[in-house]
Image (cartoon, rainbow, N blue to C red):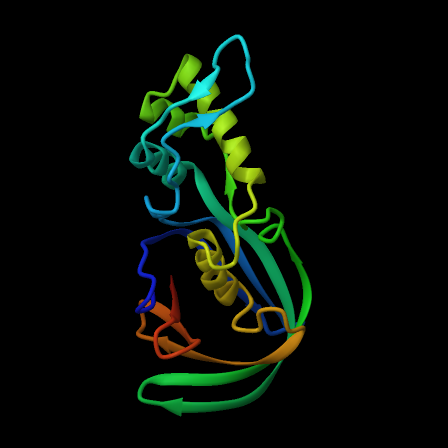
Length: 206
């Protein structure tokens, strides 16, 4: 993803371009990027007393396993657009879009910008039951309310995610982005280059 921060990316990130009404929508559902063991250093984590659990005592690698399975980015952002230019080059068609933010939601809700959910099917797969499930719920509650800084691992992941979602606009309300399209007869590929080290590739069957 870039030279300083290389992480696996999974999940569903879609781009819908409606040329009839001039709108472009980015939508991320369960967009997952691996969280580092170094980011979560909790050998122990105290929790409020309850009938089921008094302390969380989980090794960081196990905690990271839970975080990587249950925590993800999500959200949407919509733009109004005009096509400013179009050029063909080396099998690609490159279009420059003039964008203006229309609506957005969800991916900026928590301070650290990702959300941890208990997925019952995944819980069953991992064999988490009884007191362990209570521990997991309390732990995720703490993760979801913890405020990590912009230079933290979570902050760096969010920076990349935000770059993808806003097509490089970040906090600006309007701007331009060049998007390259290629159709090989079976798939349509889209490439957006944000910098020398960060690009977004999307594809769909045609």
